[in-house]
Length: 354
Image 1 (cartoon, rainbow, N blue to C red):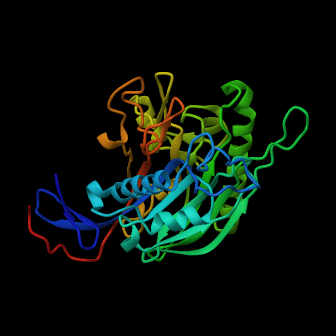
Image 2: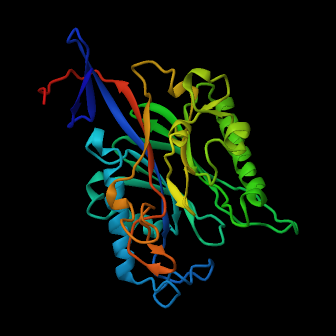
Image 3: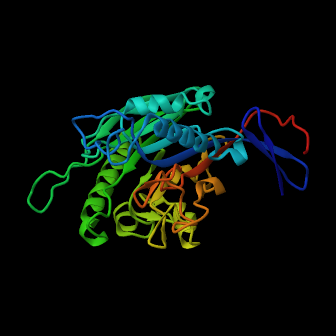
């Protein structure tokens, strides 16, 4: 079977043996941990001292501008192998504030895409938040809120972390809901920090259940840096995820990243071990939907050569901004992840066979 891409309308056309054709519209949904996208100003309310010109990282305006250029370049190319354009919706984490997002979408690589921003400041001590970018011509937000994750340490003191972002809206006249996550890290050890990620997963589950109570047919996409792999308890037992579409039951989520993980594909590396912490989860009605509505097509980890360290101690790892305490001018310590949504298009195929 061959497929042909209609670049102007972001559609692909499949030809069967009978030469009958179908055109499909494809939308890319992506997530990217951009690794400490900070401006150069010192904010007295957060611990951002290192990311200032006089701080430990010597975070100058030149380094900031290079970071913006690198991240915008990467975003512009996620999923473009099929659609020839940047993602329609992008969840982000590790952004400092709304200003860095404004600076990002006004980079030359993204400016003409006309992205909108949804962002709330969260109480995270490092000052890093989650956010959503969306193409205004494709997605129209109708609701958005920040959901607080309340955590307490062993001394019953508040452990401040990132909020979850919940957005509802219309994707080409179809209602979808998006949850953007950055779950608590494994600092202090995987086992010791595990209850925090379990709590984040439970909050995700409550949000999804409340959306479904309001709208039984709610199509939900939850994405983020979960700091857990697809096979961990927070995913498998709490969120009830499965990696095989045919085994999904009512109330369960499809995790397309599980199949990639079992193939040894990761989005970040630590001590010579690959993890797939960056994940995109979907409700089953994004698999079983009719051809004239959006449904899941396939998923991937975006890892072109320029995002990979080419030499030295961290060869093969994501090419990050700092390594071993030294500035190396890379992109992020995470690779982006993405899924394609696809639906049959009413537009007839008018292109020529390449």
